[in-house]
Length: 365
Image (cartoon, rainbow, N blue to C red):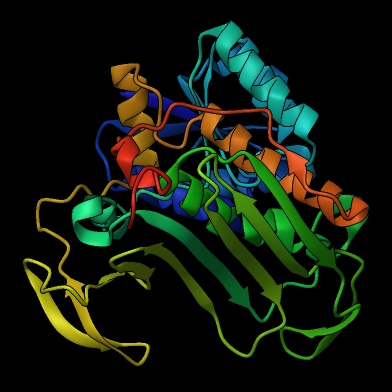
């Protein structure tokens, strides 16, 4: 039985309790929140007896196998590092932290303490895993560029999300992390970033008509470039009338869309094996690809438990997410300075894509 402790007992924590309940090899044994009554209440809801308002004391007394951290963004770093320094494995909610320095410190603590750091977003849905099968020259030709967006009306809550002194960032850290992570997980480490960031709507109406003064960024566009010269436009906006969350990978022969759990390939040179012909976004010659029945469909807790048992790095590893978060924080810097920023971090992708897929310069294509 893998034992876990929860640090942060708000709304976000609930999904992890539910995922643990669905398994018979893991259980939560302690909760911790800034206000002990919150930890006690969450514990009662899920049959957890031990509640704390001091995560260091909890770690020392309970000695769990792993910790799940779901505190507000600016409060991620301290409990994550405290756990890793004690050799306790960590599943950390996104964003990793609210400064690049803290993100680096987390990775250092994990590597020095010999513990696993799993940091969300967890991109590896069945649709994502299916899309990986088509990142090749046979289907798409040479990789030439990409786009990814997450557009929402804005967080419906009127709490710290819109307060920079607490959140230390708005749409960049809360939402842009998703499309950046998805593209980097698909296509590997990038080399530089530039972008624009602003607060488009400082006076907001949220939820059931509540008026909120906002001083966080809500309008973000980044351009990321890979070593081969391919570029991606990555966009998030808290200002739409609907939600859109999709990714596009362009190739010289075809295009791959990952949208709403669907995988669609534009293939004008011929059908895609096993694909259903569809019209997609007004384009003909498109094929919706079914997700194979045997495709893994792990929950976040399930993947965390598997990593702890096997000792293997989680797919959303600390090193991968350090690179993702370097893109975000240097995106802020690029927006402020008007100059592109070189990226220093890298990681070893957990899946392989043939190097030739990225090489557009060694022949006529």
